[in-house]
Amino acid sequence: KAAPRMAQGAVDVLGDKIARGLVISKEAHCNLWSQPPKFIHCMEAGHPYPDARSLQAGEAMLQFLRDAPDGAALLVLISGGSSALVEVLPAGVHLDDLRRLNQWLLAGGLPIDVVNRIRKSVSCIKAGRLAWRTQPHRVLQFVISDVPGDHWADIGSGLLLPDDSTEQHNDLELPLWIQQMQHHAPSKPYCDDACFHHITTRMVANNAQARHAIAQRVHQFGYTLRCNSELTGDALLAGATIARQLQEGEEGIYLYGGETVVSLPAQPGHGGRCQSLALSAALALIDEQDVVLLAAGTDGTDGPTQIAGAIVDGQTCWRGADAGMDARDALQRADAGTFLQLSGDLIDTGPTGTNVMDLVIAIKSSSVANSSL
Image (cartoon, rainbow, N blue to C red):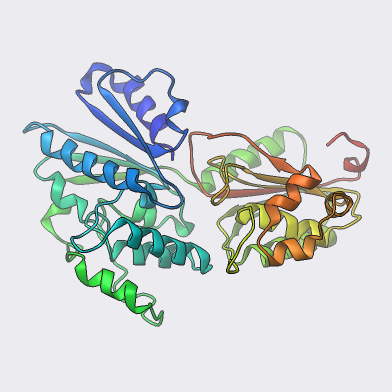
C-alpha cells in the first residue's frame, strides 16, 4: 500500500540512475503520485481480497524480472498489502480458489502470522520463492512493517525472505480444499539457500517509530503520556480493556499500536477492526465526559473498508441509538461501520502513503468536556 510513495522517494533520491520501475499498489493509491516518470509503470490490484488484477500484477512482476538486463541491480520496496495485491498461482489453482482462501482466512479471526503462513503455502512467489527469480542480480530490499513483532518474513508474505514457519501452528486443522491447494504449490527455498545470498534487507519504518513520533508530539503539547503499549488480540476485548484503563487511569494521553483481529459472522455488516475496537470502547465509555478515543489504520483504510477508523466519546452510543441502532447488536453482527456512520464518528483520510498497522490514541482530560472535539 505504500509502494507509490516509496517509489517516489527512490526516484527523488536516485533520479536518472533508475532505468525502469514497476509499482503495484491498492486501488486509488497510485493517485498519491500525481506525475510518475514515464519509466515507472503503475498498476493497481485488489485488497484485502485478491482479484484478477492481482494475478496480472504477479505476471507483470515476473516479466519485469525477466527483462532486467544482465548486471542490473534491483531495488525492491515492500510494504503491507502485498500478500493480496500480487500473486502467482501454481498450476491447478485458480482465482476462485484464491478468493475463497482469503475469505476463509480473513473471516476466522486468525493472527496475521498464521494467515500469512497459509498464504505462503499456496503461492509460487511467497515464502522466499521470488528470490529464485531475482538471480543473479544484486538486490537491495527496503521494507515497511505492518506485522506484529516486525517479523520480516511475514511482511508481504516474505517474497524475498526465507520462511521459518514450518514448525509453527501445526495444531491448526485446515479444510481439505486448502490442503489440496497446498499440494499444487512448489517447494520453498531453505533458509540458507544461495538465492538469498545476493539480497540485502533493511527495515525503514514500523509501528514503534510511529508511536515514538506521537510521543514526541504529546510532549510538545505539554501532555503526559500515560501509556505506550502494543495492541494485539480480539478487537472487541481490546476496546473494552482500553476503556477500562482510561476509566481507572489519570489524565493524559494513552497510546497503543499494532493489529487486532475480528471474528466475522456468516453475514457480516460493514466496518473493520479499528471501527469495531472504537465502538467496543465507546460502549464501555457511555456518559464519560472526559475521554475521546481515536482508532485508525495508518494506511487510511480499515479492513475491507475505505474508512480509516473512528473517533468516539461518551456520547457515541447515544448518537447511534438516536439514529435507530443498538451498539451491542452492531458489534455482534460486525456492523460497527454502519453504527459509527450514523453516530457521525467515522474518519476518512484517504490513502496515506504508509502502512505500519493501527494506532489507538486516547485523551483523558477534564478540559475535553468543554472542548469542541
